Image (cartoon, rainbow, N blue to C red; front, side, top):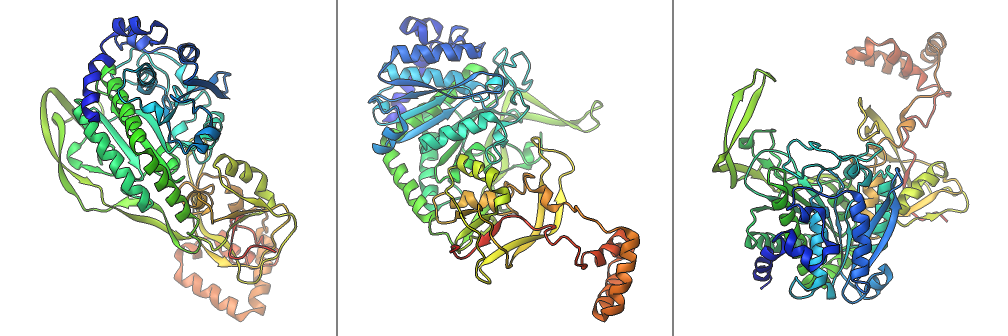
Length: 593
C-alpha cells in the first residue's frame, strides 16, 4: 500500500546532504547541503531549472511565464514521464495536472525546497510506482520572487528556520494571497495566465502558518470539502482523508482544518472552520470547480521537519492523482455542467460555521495566562517541555451565509467600463461577448442595483479602499450602449462570475473599490438655491410637504442635519444626478436582439 512505501523512503529522502549529493550533485539545494539550516537565493532556482531540464530532457520542460516588477524571470518546471509537457497535450490526453506553488509568502519558503526534492525523487526512481507516468506536475518554486530576494534573518520571528528568508509581500508591497480576484500585481496576472493555460485539477499553495505553540506539524485544507458543489465535496473529502492517513503513517501529526484559535493566544476559545473566499488561492480555484489546497506547516517546528512534512504532502497528492485523477476530472466536468444550469437558481457565495461544536483532542503544550506589565494585557506563556492534550471546541458545520439568485441570462457591463472589466474577465477565464450595436431590452427584462447605503473603508487594504453596499436589484428601462459586454451566466465559471459582479459579494469588484466613483456625488446645489427650490416644491406639492414634516418628526438625525434636510429636496429636483449610487453593471433576463 502507498503509505508503507511512503514510510520506507522517508529516511532516504531526507538522509542528508552527502547521500543526496552523491546521487545527483547538480540537483541538490542549499537546504540539503546545510542539513536544512539555510535556503538558497533565487539564482539557485534559475540554476536548478536548467539543471533539471538537462538531467531529464524528455521529462522536464522549464518555462518563463512572467517577469516581476524588479525584472526577475518567473519560472515553472513541468514534469511528466511520458512527455505530456504542453497544456494542449495534457488536455487532449485527459491528463490530471497538479500545480504546486511555493513562496507566495517568501518568508514561508518550505515549498520551494520540498518541491525540488520531491521533483527529483519523482524523476530519478526514488518514488515507487512512477506516478509521473500518469500525472503532469507544474512546479512554481517561488511565486513572490522579488519578496524572496528581500532576504535576511528574522523576517519571521515566530518561525524556526531557515536562518534567512524572504519577505511576505512583493516589491510593490502587495500580498499575493489576497490578490486573486483583483489581480493588481503583475505577478498575479502571470499566475492567472498560467492557471488558465494548464487548468490544473488540483492547485496546492504551500505556506507556513503562524499562531500558538502546539505539537501538530502540518495542516492541509482542501476546497471543496465541507462546502461547494456536492460532486466535488465528496471527492475533496476523500483526498483529505487519504492525505491525513498518509501523513500519519509517515510520522506526522496532521490537521485538516486551519489551527487559528478564535481568540488569539487563547487555545481554550476553540477553533472555527473558515470558508476561504476567492481572494485566496484555495478559495479562488474552488470557484473554478477544481480543487484548491492550502498547505500550512507549523512555524514552531524546525525547517527540516517542515520541509519533510511538505514533501510528504506533495508525494501523497501525486500518488492520489495517479490512481484517482480520472475520477477527479470526471467530478470537475460534472461540476462544470451543473454550473451551466444555475440560471435563475439560488447560488451560495459565502458559507459560515454554525455555533454547533464538538470537543476535540488537540495536541498542545502546558500554558499560563499571566498579566503583562509590558502590554497591560494577558500574556500566554507556553511550556514546550510539557506536552498536554487540550480539550477544545471545534465548530465545523457550514451553512450558507450569502445566497443570491443567479440572473436568467447574465450581466451587462456598459461600454464605459467594458475595457478594464474585459481584461479582468480574460484573466479569470470568464466568457463574454461584445455587443456591436446599442440595444434597449424589453420592459422588465433588465435590472439595475441602486445602493441605499454605501460604507467606504476608512483605511486601505491591499492598496485599495473598499466599499460595502446595501440595496437591491430592481427593474429599470435603460439602454445598453454599443460596445457593452454580455457576460452569460451559463458557463462553467458561473459562481466566479457572481463573485465578481454581484455588488454585495465580499470579493466583488464593488467590494474591492473598483466602482467607488459610482457612489460619489459630483454635482451639487448650493444651499441658498436649495432653500428657494425647497419652498417652491413645498408650495406646489402637499404630499411632499407631508412627507417632509413626517420625516422631521420621526428621524432626529435628519431633523438635526441642515445638509440632509436640503438634500431631501435637491434629490427630488430634475437637476439631481439619477446615476448617483447606481451600480454600473446590470442583470439581464433576455439576450439583447
